[in-house]
Amino acid sequence: MDLGNNFDLRIGTTMHFTFTDLVDGVTEESLGERAGTAGNDRFLYTSFSVGTPSR
Image (cartoon, rainbow, N blue to C red; front, side):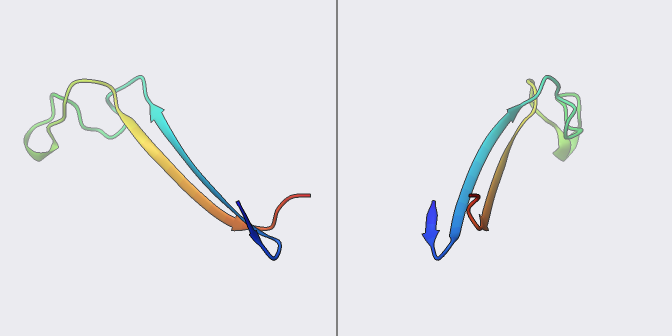
């Protein structure tokens, strides 16, 4: 998005689906508060930047 005065704004979000349930160290075999659910882990990465547009 062009913000005017030679500045731009970029926003991005990516959902990562993993092939393991061990990314965070919590599995369905974990006990107590660290007990997890069956299924692979996933995580969401969101970023933003303000800068000058490339020419």
